Amino acid sequence: MKDMIPVDRKMSTMQDSKISARGVQVYYGDNHAIKDVDVDIADKTVTAFIGPSGCGKSTFLRCINRMNDTIDVARVVGDIRIDGEDIYDPKVDPVQLRAKVGMVFQKPNPFPKSIYDNVAYGPKIHGLARNKAELDEIVEKSLRKAALWTEAKDRLNSPGTGLSGGQQQRLCIARAIATAPEVLLMDEPCSALDPIATAQVEELIDELRQSFSVVIVTHSMQQAARVSQKTAFFHLGNLVEYDDTDKIFTNPQDPRTESYISGRIG
Amino acid sequence: MNEHISSAYDRDLEGITTLIMQMGGLVEEAILKAAKSLADRDVELADEVRAGDKVIDALEIQINEEAARTIALRAPVSKDLRSVLTVLRLAASLERIGDYAKNIAKRTSVVVEMNPVSGSDAALRRMAREVERMLKDTLDAYVRGDAELAEDVRQRDQEVDQMYNALFREFLTFMMEDPRNITACMHLHFMAKNIERMGDLTTNMAEQVIYLVTGEMPDEARPKSDKTAFVTDPG
Image (cartoon, rainbow over all chains, first blue to last red):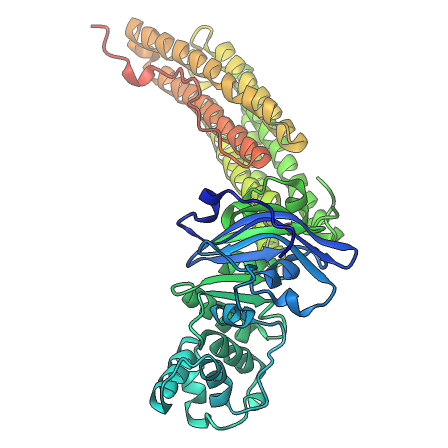
């Protein structure tokens, strides 16, 4: 990373913040997509990013596991630390980083492989299991955590793509948590799911909070209100307001937040 | 505050505000009429107040239903949520104030049969007028989103409390002077207490308006002047 902005050491090593971002700017070519964002994201907490389309919330989410590296024209400036460690340090291997910072996408995207292999893939490539028995254990544990075990245990060798949409999404969550990540990023994980599957994934998110720091981008304000403890409102690339979720939804301080969450013309 | 993207949502909220104002208008009228019926010894007017309370009660039910519908269908947040919570509480307070006015009217029909207690009718009427003005200002503050005016109402409750203290002592004196005054004084005292309670409820409403506008309930203690709870036998 070239244009490093000096950061206050005390802030970036704050005990209770898992992820700490300072002066983050993202450019897609000439488009300034994220403008000077500072944020501290707590451990074992669900943090929701909300805001209108194009506000930069997904872009910022993708900075946290360096997914923007895969886009040629994208340039990230500023300082993002996980547990005080600069994730844009040249010594950091993005593949290792992504094992630590898992991601679940909007559309369920299981590999065209069996349910078992979908979950086993990450642990295999990262060498997390020494033998088949250990791998079996990781697969079972991950599927259990993703609340998919009872439905999938008798068909582990069937293709993951044969599951229902909601099951596929839970499979993707199982796949993301199989590498024992510390942070789980979710980009609109329920937008392709029906209300029942959505409720199951939301319940799951709440359970995952025991083990991970979860960051979720959502267009559903009600979902943000239901699952998160902290909410960040993005608008035109700026982080407008970041506070406890109940505060954001009962008494937001910025009129732009108020307009957005209450569905007003703003 | 900007309009909602859904204009039907705005119409729903405006509809509930209109109902509150309608209810508030009827309650103001009930307070003034109840006090007038006592001062003029007008039993017919008192009966009118008693009958009118049914309309006020029906409006409260309608407001509750509209508020529940809005919560169910619109899932209001932030200021919209506060405004729905506020109308529920305003409606509940208005309904209680209406009940107190009705109780005054009931007692009026009994008191008119007794000897007047000098000066008390006029004092009660002054007190009722003051409360009615507080209520009017509270409703104005609600419609205009004026937290300052609501705060002003909140401070004025102590004047009502002081009027009540004075009346309380007066009634005690009258009763000690002549035990034949006791029945009338007891009724009149309950009327005064009713008006004093109306003032308290109006103050709660004003606080609710402050919450609606600012997002926070005023926590600072307001001046209280009802000292009658500590009155002892002068022996």
